[in-house]
Amino acid sequence: MLFMRSLPLRAPAAFQSKFGPKLKTQAHIGGFPLVAFKNYAFTAAGFGAAAGIALIFFAEEVPPVRRDILEQIPVIGGYWKREIAPEDNPF
Image (cartoon, rainbow, N blue to C red; front, side):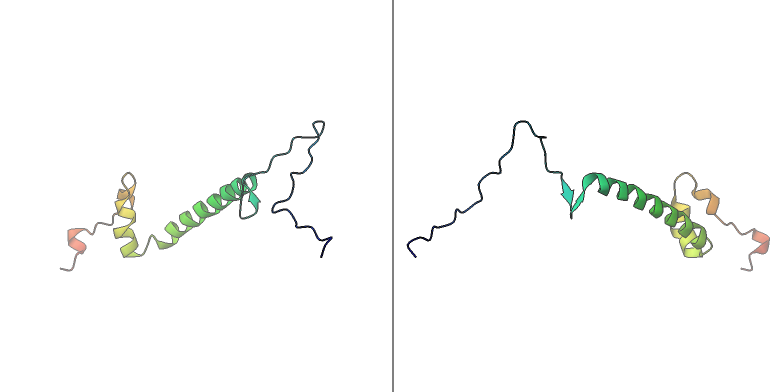
């Protein structure tokens, strides 16, 4: 017990030589550096855009999707309007 020293509360600063490289810590999200996160984000955005376009092509024939979503697009919404001629309307 006499020879036991108390440990410091924090570790001493590591030695850094003035001749060595100047290292900095990288910012990261969940362990991935921001550069890698940016690359994954662009890839995911591309896959998301492709999935959205495929969803529009598959769902454009469903009447509620066409009427409530696709016809409301400002510039190209008129493409999805389906008008029934008066002579074809049974009512």
